[in-house]
Length: 265
Ligand code: HEC
Ligand code: HEC
Image 1 (cartoon, rainbow, N blue to C red):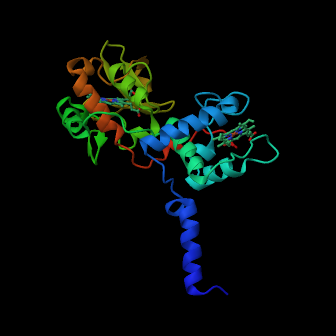
Image 2 (cartoon, rainbow, N blue to C red):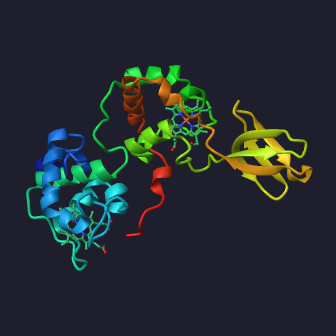
Image 3 (cartoon, rainbow, N blue to C red):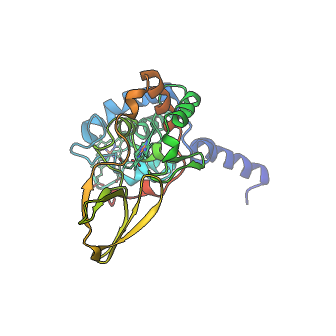
């Protein structure tokens, strides 16, 4: 039997080893991450590639252990290795291991990168003034023509977010394909395709209205590029765009969408 005191000491020793109950004590710490980057380059890059995207060993960007598992699991894999599959343990202190974990997370786990520079509060104002809020929800309010952006920084890298704003047509968010329904008489209605079957087609038009059309009326459906207006960013100074990106980088609510598309390790 352990005495209460000894039990307490044991628990705090375990918690200390895990870093606050399993969360990484080095997460988000710029200096620790820089040290982790050095260790990674010397001890991991040879197998997993310089950018972690794979070499003779698999990519860490699509690893469940890196992206989805609790920090403690990733720590354990690095500390103990994976016997039998060619993943060696890292001989080093626990803090060295946490630093590597923090570094790999910063490059491979959406929402764990170092904060994007800029002023997020000023960026919030840009989001309102540039009209983004008409079509996107953040912080619980906004329009629904475009995707909810409450967890955008967990789903997309900052580079991809920037591209979504400066060149919306390049990569259209899943579920937001834009189409035009054209009638024989020559009119057309544009919107985001919400649903279609053999008989009908449903769109959300730019003013946020849901409309359904019967296919029997001879409506032709044509794809068109994103309904996110191009050129919005041309009206922003580079400082305003940077602040907007800093604001979007803080939108890290947990999301279901980031849980799909992993290798099945
Ligand atoms: C000698 C080559 C080698 C080195 C060095 C190495 N690894 Fe690995 N690593 C592997 C191999 C091989 C696998 C597993 C492949 C498999 O599961 O089929 C692996 C698997 C992993 C996994 C689990 C991936 C998954 O989701 O299944 C993680 C995480 C990982 N390595 C991180 C690291 C880190 C961090 C370092 C540096 C501290 C490192 N590795 C060093 C070869 C290496
Ligand atoms: C008229 C409505 C509209 C306005 C205004 C608008 N967007 Fe969008 N946005 C959309 C639609 C629709 C999509 C989905 C299609 C696509 O990905 O291009 C989208 C996509 C996005 C995405 C990608 C989302 C993802 O899940 O990948 C980001 C980021 C984004 N918009 C940011 C902004 C910002 C920032 C502004 C303001 C500068 C803005 N949008 C203004 C309609 C709009």
